[in-house]
Length: 125
Image (cartoon, rainbow, N blue to C red):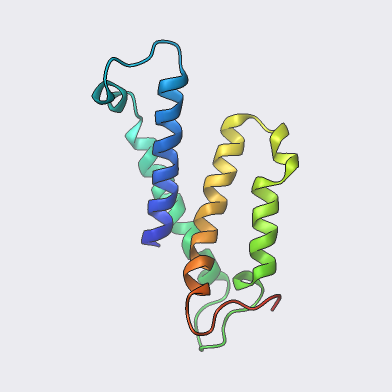
């Protein structure tokens, strides 16, 4: 949950910072740019990221060492990546596209961490 919260909050922070620099009047300093960040939004994304990072274990609780099935699989990771980063997402509004990608990265951070364990991730189930 900590990693997923950091991913979502960090992505939101960077997105907002990019919007500050690409916006109308550029800030005079980096500190002025930081003053324009909505930290409540960063916190909300962090909280949402924590929940989404825990989602695989909510859907498939770790009741035994072989609990990883569909929601912990490489095929699920591929579906999440396609859903958030596929060509169809280019048609979405930029803020919607960003939100979907931040959510996807939070979920994928859980799968990434699980992939590094001895059990790894199954292909399908």
